[in-house]
Image (cartoon, rainbow, N blue to C red; front, side):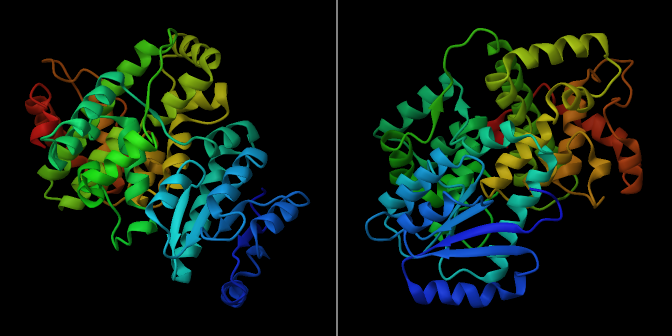
Length: 412
């Protein structure tokens, strides 16, 4: 889709009154959105066979073919199309069954601005992937990210334990990239009617409860264990350790700066998820990733994101931001992931989770603990100067040195 073309959306609902109301409310968007309407899943598939759409928005409870079945077929036959649910009182089992086929769940009645923001956000993030159809199809087809086997097994054991608790389950999930990304997608869906964005895996577990978590994991298998593969295992392990450390550092910096609990949570979660794009590259493009590593060895003075753009046509930051944005994770997390290596490209320069993630990632990526350590080269000092934070770098470095050997996620 070009930058200037309209967003093409197909709305599907068996209630004629609902479609008529949508049509009226969407008139104000006619210069930006090209909308069509279908009264059934069968009619929607007929329209899709003749036209391309950027997004399908379907009701869940429909006769003959419900929303989950429709979106499953859309996913299989039209892999470049985003898939949203806009539904009212759906049963929990129906919602859980739809998790593998939908990207976001919006609850009826849905405020028009909520719908507008969700649509525009999802489409705008696609522009960062340029015109690469292959990667868009790949990302639109991802249901979940693999979890580390040891943490996956720990969670399984905890869920079947007679004395499991929300706290213990949350602590396990908060250590894993794959589990965190998926549990936040579920908790931030409109199905649960929570008015505020859920910013941490521990908070998500508290909202969902043990019974639903057990259903998600044991019955619907929304988490997957990382399979055995040789070429990328060492890099996956490094990414996990790096991400956990960055998450802890980012949260500590936010806390030391007096930021509120929500900003601390956003900083932690963004830190944990900031490398998910790299995991996707390793698992799906192992040969190109090897090419990237070889190029990096020959060009150590060049930034990673520049080399990734050269090899893949996009950076891991753009891939990660697109996926978490598509899944409906909060904007501060999406923004921090997207710009964590290039913060100056962000339209704002306020103190934010992006700031803490950028600095934490730079600290953890370079050895600044020794006696001759300086400010990490990866820190964008122009960005910090614009934000009026240059004077804080040395203080942050001291805090990092004092805490880097004592990071314990269970104490954060």
